[in-house]
Image (cartoon, rainbow over all chains, first blue to last red; front, side):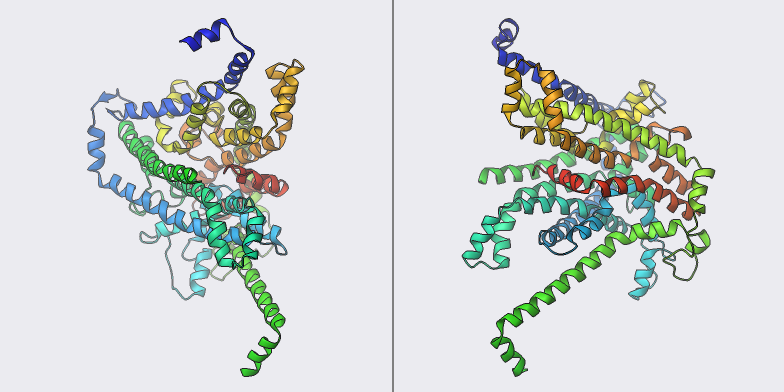
Length: 300
Length: 290
């Protein structure tokens, strides 16, 4: 309270400045309260109701959650989401790091190659989903040429067994360049002196990689780990365009599950309960990763 | 065999040079394979956009169109509302970029250069929103938009993206590096805080603003889910929706879809090619690196 009084009675220069500074942030504060905090609280509230949008919401306690955990479609959706997220992120981490290490060297046409490699990241996922949809066509698609050439016979990428792989391939291909650039920036920020000193001490390439590059890159590696997983959790477009969550439920990730239940079946309460669990999963996972990041920062 | 070993041993330089040449060759081979993988879908899209349906689905393998026929492009614009989709996308994306350019630097400046109680908490709060998947909050957002009577409006498509945590973070990082002396000198000269922001901070931050505009453009040009939910009229369709509806309604017209995809992809590719370095630097600075 004392602080507040000071604010009103004797605004010193620095206090006036602080108040002005806070005013600059007010639009941001309001925006994120209105478009993030309030909707999260509303999602939680709606999740305790049965509501078909056109009727009146009716409070039903935890019944939506009980129903969710008994719903094989939902359990499948959680499983499919986790499969997609890790099957996409883990290859991205390794391929992107490998490419970044290559582009960290100097060679002729480096810039040209970098431009070409970045193309997938620039064009929208909607366009790529459509292109890959046709590419996956077992008769006329580009993948048919490849599988023919490799004598693999007629591979149906969009059948139930392979549909998830098809989504993962597209996502790895589209996501790799972005993380490559972030790794590359991380590699560039490692002081060259470290390598010079190691060379003088007689460290070979591998030793330099293990003892300088990797430890120095750890904050970036963790950043990419956190962000890529969050981004993968949000996936919607390829499934919406190419598979509609199918065949069967093979690619029905949680965003598609929520979209269908909310906006096609108009089960607002049910979709909200799924949203709450979805959000909790992400927060839990991110908390674990942030803990890793934090303990890393404390080490140094 | 012996001879070769001896030779190599006698001329260590020679062996090293051979190794270098080989490793260069392997490098370029790998790079070429990568370039092929990353560019072929786009090249194929462009090529297919000039093909007729018959060519596209002919039994013989075809990578190039028999001639440069623009029929698909003409049909996309004449038989379908493609020009309208394009215009809508430009309006929505333009609005989102403009609002981000106004608000992200404002909030970023506050977080970078002022001290007040709760500032770090606010910063953490904004950064934490990165974790919130849009799908998880889309139901209340839709209900809000509906109760405002904003269904089928541009503002509904724009409002939830008027600011982004990434944008604010980007601006904060950049402004954090502006020397305090610049700002203090202006204060001593008696400039108001708003004048300092408008006449000193914003002009210095111009490179970051360009980066912000680019990243916002790439991000919002692609938005599919939200416009899908808050619009249902043909007149308000954006490019991503236009393209997907296209697949549903004209499943067999892949030729037109390819032309449509090229039109949708072109602005982003052009912008990227023109401002590549700044764009890549911006992507990198999002990770907190400079």
